[in-house]
Amino acid sequence: MWYFVCPEVVFGEDALSRLAELPGKSAFIVTDKNMVKLGLVDRVKEQLAQAEIVTDHVFDEVEPDPSLETVRKGSAMMRRSEPDWVVAVGGGSVMDAAKAMRVEYVRPDMPAEEINPFSLGLDLGSRCKLVCVSTTSGTGAEATWAIVLTDTQTETKLGLGSRDVLADIAIVDPALAASMPPQVTADTGMDVLTHGVEGFTSTFKNDISDGLCIRAIQLVFQYLPRAVANGDDMEAREKMHNAACIAGLGFGNSMAALAHSLGHALGTVFHIPHGRAVGLFLPYAIEFIGEGREELWAEIAYAIKQEVPDGSKAVPVLNRALRGLAGSIKQPLSIAEAGVPADQFDRAMSKLIDNAVADSQLVSTLRVPGEAETEKLFRYAYEGKSIDF
Amino acid sequence: MSLVIGTQEWADAAMQELNSSQIYKEAAKNWEGDMYVIIEPDATFKHRIIGYFDLWHGDCRSASVVKDESEKSPQYTISGSYPIMKQLLEKKLDPVKAMITGKLKVKGNMGQIMRMPRAALEFTNCVSKVDAVFPE
Image (tube, rainbow over all chains, first blue to last red; front, top):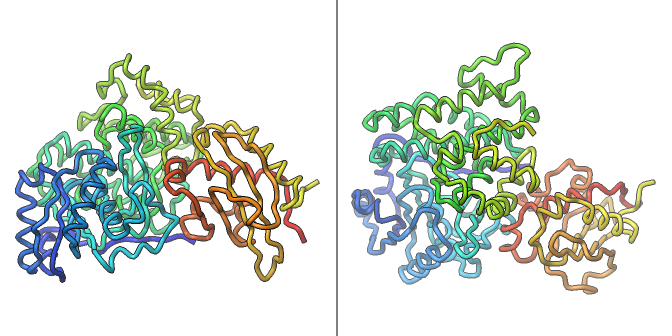
């Protein structure tokens, strides 16, 4: 038995106008300062005003890799505001923070760090519903029940989540992602790709999510280079925005895996954007898992029109395509290329290993590395060496 | 010869598996807290089995079978019906999936569990390695 859960997904041109149809009295907007500066929060407010929903309270302090402290601050403000809607306007960090804030607002007995998939029945929606308005084409957080927060005291990422925290409505309007600069488009696009590949090959993979993951991978290969090369290519923008949500629906119901564990560890310690970090590790994770998923690597290769010659293995074929795509959008192929100095990398190794082996995504990885193998994975990825162990 | 689940010999063997597993040691190296594993009876299985495991930083310090839950006050409890536990021990069911779908009930400090989900996974993997059968 397993579940497939998803919000109402409103996508395509003018999807934002769904906000003008919401019932209710007041909304609490969770966002970041950049969204305010870009005018996206004003556009959200205009739509909500048409529904006669009051938006007096905006929390715009969500930082990249949001901390437990930020969630506490937002939920405290939410309690004073008593909204019947939370509207998250931003990327994955904003949406994850908003999910956690709503939990702390409705269920003060459950601090964010204890949000877990085992204690269901939070009944959040009867008091306050959640809309996620995605402004990046990456995390798919608008469609998942995962929450990633940072414990700044221990410098670790907390992989939290519960089916109960899922947004009620996901708004996937390509116009909102049009302002992403090329670097962010590339970084977030690698996140989509990694979600698709890992969601399709994790130990929690399932028939319902498989097709979504494959479709997301296809869209990335077809449209990500175009979206990076020309931000005004609205067809590519729309397809990538859809791909992010599709991948979220896919991996959100089948989990991610090893590349995410390694990427979370590296990203937390060296502050590398999430998508860039997990995308960097994807080929190494595929090599490490190797033949345990041979038929699935071959399926992915087939889906992106890469031929695996008779008698050959799919891993090198697939990885050539993945690295080719990453290289074409100037993504680093090794940790060294990501700009991490060797001495700092060596000093951080113990922390990197601790973070990676404790990461929640390892529970759905087909081949789980021990500490010694995790160190080797990091060192090989630093140098850009193919995994041979 | 297979051990019988719910006997002290079975608990001892499970403790030995835990203490000899490098994977468990690494996954649970920051784990602090003892645990009940409870197999609930159903129409086809009349026994209620309560295993007690004292787990500390990757080691199992003691393991026993208790007759009554009130005998100890562990920080964590994992419980499930006989058919679910049977599937778990036969590795036909993923323990994390079982917890997420509510087939396995988990009680305790969720903050710690969410920081170390692999500890729970590897604990189950080790216990399921014991060559054991359910009592008649």
